Image (cartoon, rainbow, N blue to C red):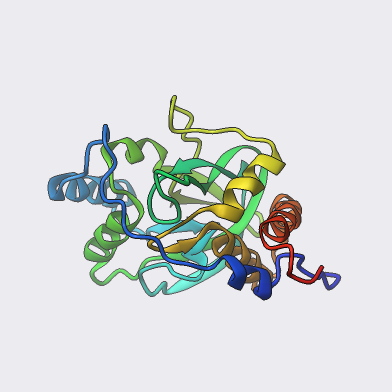
Length: 233
């Protein structure tokens, strides 16, 4: 793979880096209960029937999976692609400056990592991951199984935030408008820009290049320079 140089440099990331106060739970959404997480975990385990449980990681789960996978392999999910299409007002955004979260949207293909849970304490580790990734009942619609191709062999895996197209939950923006939001948004987990930067770097460590993310980071870099005109080109 040819060496590529990021426009979205560490210096640009540092220029916008900040932590915003936790905005708390969003109005109009229903928080998941302990019983909900138990039910979701049990549904996954029932489907696995004692076999291995896999999570398909395409973003932050690649470098922060919340569990120690016993096996991780590169895989490709056909019919899916990465997209910053979920408006968020917490984590990496605020109600005053909403951000965008990356999800899997329909179309194309997506290379990522298939992570296998260890059999020991799989239920506890699965519930822990579910709690990190999903807060509201409305999030459950985008937790789903999908087929991942691993060196020509199809493997069932689960993934988070796939095709969340319900009204008010899915936002299809042109690339420049995505970049506008990402360059400005931050929450108590940090900035949208840092998340994009880290995702690209971590994918590259596994030999994965996403042309959409690559185009997006050029636009985000331009937006940050507009916000901070004193930074070098």
